[in-house]
Image (cartoon, rainbow, N blue to C red; front, top):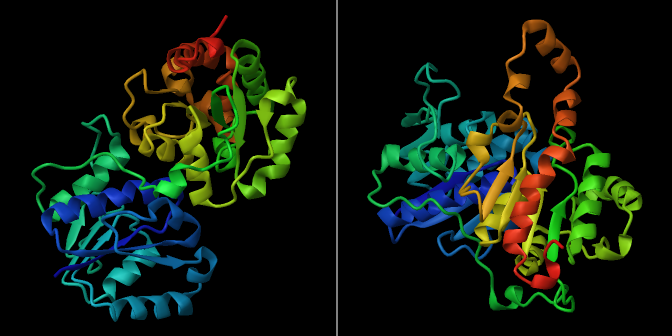
Length: 359
């Protein structure tokens, strides 16, 4: 029986996408035991996954200390893994690969012309461009497996596995109108819209549709989310105090919502894995081709400033320098006036309850 480790020390969306490595490698080795090595705050997204036997959780700050990294590498070496996949491909994961003793170590090169170093037995280049509707980030993970173990029927769609108890999460069951989850803040300031834009979008949705808006934000963002809430006009339609402080709790809440509107990030990938419609507002600094997965213009759709105003991305050197000195400049160009027409079409399509539709 093969023993396989996947190292994905990154954020929630990355871990969910990397779960496809487990799905695909199990199609090659059905009896294999697959372990995942992840940061503790991301583990919930792969709990109960049918193809993952064990989740090895680690604290991000703790692992950054070299003695702790060495101790972790030695501990993992004692597991005697046969195969390691490293989609993370950074110093920590490469160090673990190097000292793992695994006969097969598959990881990405940082650059196509990187020298062949001993971290991996299979050094894989990232794909130059996407060819599938799943988006490049997912396709790269499939490519990582396929480079070492050819796949006949690749699996491209990540899944979240809920228990019957989780499916019956009670917090939103009392509401008679659709509940729309809205990501009011991105995972970083660079991925977050200007607050007044968010407020304008919220006020528009509440004014035009009979829905409840459930705010989504990280625990450390509550103070900032409250600023947005306080600026909104109709607070009675906003569910601010319904909150889950764990990833697993958030997943259960998302599963009870009708759809998601959010900045690009882990919440979008979770919604898609739960088969919930999603409208993604991309930060101008995010490569849409990498992260826009399964977009068909109906169930999953998005908006990116590059699509709406491409001339902003082909400015002369002086204009580009101004933008680089003021990175918020591009995000300020992605106004509600650009977003709302597309968003209205999306909401009208998915809010099937006639009482919720646009008047």
